[in-house]
Amino acid sequence: MASLPIDTAKYTGIICAVPPTPRVANRETGQLRVDRETGKTVYQVGLCLMAGASADVVNVSVAGEPAGVQLGMPVAVRDLVATPWENDGRHGVAFRAVEIRPLSAPATPAGKGSGQ
Image (tube, rainbow, N blue to C red):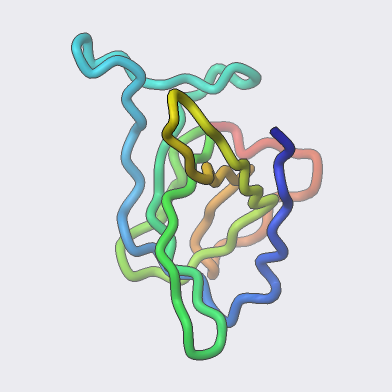
């Protein structure tokens, strides 16, 4: 299915609602999920997306640990996409971002990795 880009500039605020945790690929062995392109561990962060009088919390996956991101902290999200999925009669939307960083941290230059 197609990934749908999300314009985060339309939100009045984005706050870390659940701190970053590594995603587990195999619950029996404890093996962590690894990004296919970068080889980095995939982390999940619960983000509160606020727009006007409404707010939603979504779990967002990101390759590499989002350094400095803590509970309750305003964050910046780069290249957020939503991907609808369906598997064995279950369905939902998976969210993924290229980068999640504290709002006060300097931006990573375009095309440069954060080195994580």
